[in-house]
Image (cartoon, rainbow, N blue to C red):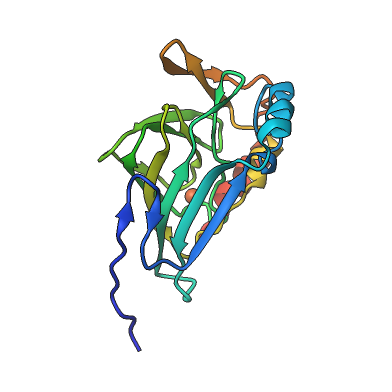
Length: 206
Ligand SMILES: [Fe+2]
């Protein structure tokens, strides 16, 4: 029995996806150990820990292979110290699975890191499509003054591995305010992956 086609209206301002199966939200207090300035983070949690920093609405097919997950992500603007609000970030558990993001409103960047620790930063604004190739760790960052909304899609069997970033004490770079714009700076806590860890990532192919 093949599935019915479906239509899903994207609300680019409120970051909603019509006719959609699932919503999850991250509050500021959930995002521990992501930001360089832990004092500023603790203070922000005391003042507004229940603030919703990002929300995802997505549609998951029942079948785990050969289909697509798709949805919309909505990120509030803000900073912890000089560091912009970001998502926790991950690599796909099946690491050779790619992802597409498409800018709906606001502005931000996709921060990506290869297993060897090279970084790439792609600026995303409305109508910019960003391709995250297989094997890149990825996280989105709202560098604007308004909500940052993107739609996305990735293979349904991809999965998410959040530990890959925790193991290296964050991604190699941070995205911080620089005058009226942003800049990429080194993460002082970062510990590069060893040869075995790199090999393990490349071995998780589907
Ligand atoms: Fe992803």
